Amino acid sequence: MKTSKLFTPYSIGPITLRNRTIRSAAFESMCPGNRPSKELYDYHLSVAKGGIGMTTVAYAAVTRSALSFDRQLWMRPEIIPELRKITDVVHKEGAAASIQLGHCGNMSHKSICGETPVGACSGFNIYSPTFVRGLRKEELPALARVYGDATRMAREAGFDAVEVHAGHGYLISQFLSPYTNHRKDEYGGSLENRMRFMNEVMKEVMEAAGNDMAVLVKMNMRDGFKGGMELDETIQVAKQLVRDGAHALVLSGGFVSKAPMYVMRGAMPIKTLTHYMDCWWLKWGVRLFGRMMIPTVPFKEAYFLEDALKFRKAIHEIPLVYVGGLVARNKIDEVLDKGFEFVQMGRALLNEPGFVNRMKEEENARCSCKHSNYCIGRMYTIEMACHQRLNEELPPCLIKEIEKLEKE
Image 1 (cartoon, rainbow, N blue to C red):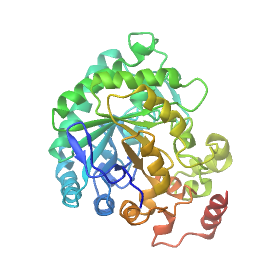
Image 2: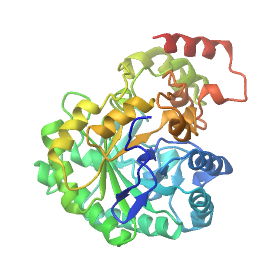
Image 3: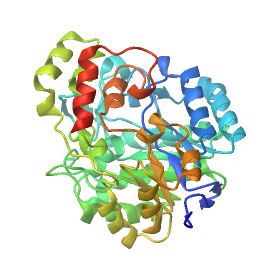
Image 4: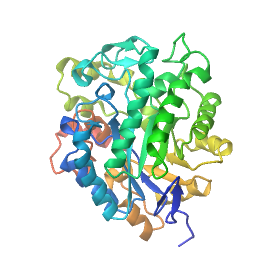
C-alpha cells in the first residue's frame, strides 16, 4: 500500500487529531425539541467507532432566533449534560468532537424561531415564506456575544472544537455577501464593512475558546450565483479570518436559500422532499415549481477542488479543510497530496459510518453513495438517513425516483 498522509496525526490549533478526517457538519435533523436525542448519540458514536479523526455535531443555533428547523439543536444550559454524553462516548472511541455554531438569519419562520426572522437587511424570504426584519446596529454586539456564550457551553459539554458557520447564506454570510447586505451604515458597503460583524463574532469566540479549544470557520469560496461573492472577495475574507485567529478554514460554497445544490451537487429529489412534508400548500408548490426553484448542479468527485486550490495558494498560515464530493480513498489521497491538511465528509459517512476504518484496509475503498440525495430530501422534515440503511420500506414512487437519479 502506498504511503498516505490520511492516517497520520495532525493539529488544529491546540488539539491533535488521530488522522486527517473530519465528519462534516451535515445537518442530522435528529434533535426533536431542539435537544440531543439518542439517535444523535448513536449516529456520532457510530462515526467515532468508524475511525473518524473528529466528528462534528451539526448546526447548533446560538440563540432561539437562530433556529431554522424544528429538529435543530439550540445551545442552552439545560442541554449541556446531554451533549456531554455524546462527547464522552466519542472520546472513548479515540475521536475528537466538534460542534458547529450558527445563526440562520433570514432563513427561518416565526413559528420556529419565535419572532420575525432577522437578517442583515429587511425583506421577504420566499423560501420560508416570511417577512424579514433587518438587524439594528445596536443589536449586533449582543448577537456576537451569544456566539461566545455558545462556545463556553460547548467547552462545558466537552467539545474539543467549535466550527463557526460563516457560509451558505446564513447570518454571517448574509452580512458578507453583497447580494443580501444593502446596509448604509458601517456594517454595509465596502468588504471591510461587510466583514465587521464576522470580526465581532470571531473576537467573542476566540476569547471564549481560550488556549485549549480549536476554532474552525466554514466559509464560502463562492456564493454560487450572479451577484454573490466571488473569489476576489472571499480570499480576502479568508485572510481576515486568519488575522482574527481562526485555527482552520473549511472551504465550501453556495447559498442554501438561493443555490442549494451548488452546496450539495446533483438533483434535489422533489418527490422525496414533498413526500415527507406536512404543509399541504408548500407540498403542492414544491411539486409544481421545485425543479425551477432548486435547479440541478451536476455532481463530480471533489467538486470544490479547483477553487480550493486557489485558497491553498493564498493561505499558508493555518490548516485548510477540503469538503465537497469525497467518496473514495484515491480522491482523498489526491486532495491531501495537493496540500490540504484535512478532509471533511458528510454523505459518505451517512452511507457508511465505518468508511474511514475501511479505507485503512482497502487502498481503493469507495463508499456506495450514488448521490440520489434522498438523504437531503428527507432531512428537511425528519431525520437525515441514507436510503440504503433504512429499516422502513419506501413507497414505489420514491424507489423509482432514487433509481432514476442514481442512473443520471
